[in-house]
Amino acid sequence: MDKKPLLIIQMGVPPQPIAQVVGEQSDWFSAALAAQPRELLLVRPERGERLPHPDAVAGAVITGSWSMVTDRIDWSESTAAWLRQAYHAQLPLLGVCYGHQLLADVLGGLVADNPKG
Image 1 (tube, rainbow, N blue to C red):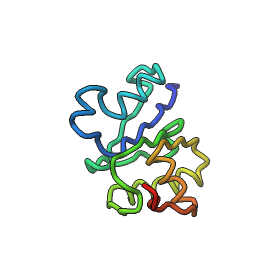
Image 2 (cartoon, one colour):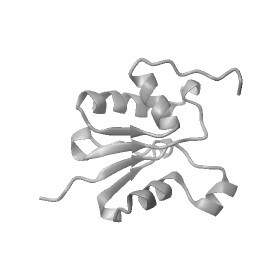
Image 3 (tube, rainbow, N blue to C red):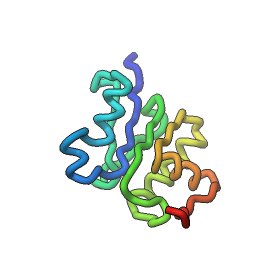
Image 4 (cartoon, rainbow, N blue to C red):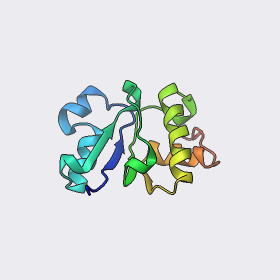
């Protein structure tokens, strides 16, 4: 039986000058994980791509974003609903930057703007 892929949930895209130099978030995680493309599944909610059932993946990495969790953007909110389901299914989850803020929000934590910048 084939091994389940690791899901990378790319939360938006970097500004073009950054992407031109270092690529996008999925590129960064693919390189850091030294994973073969068949071992990863990339989903981009901001493009309307649907997240798989949590049972279909080995775990999920939720990337950073240039958006704010507190903006409650539709694609972020739908990802949050999926994360609730994945958490209750005990799927291993790793949130980075925006990703960890979204996970905190999903699990009842406080996510807010920092008044000091």
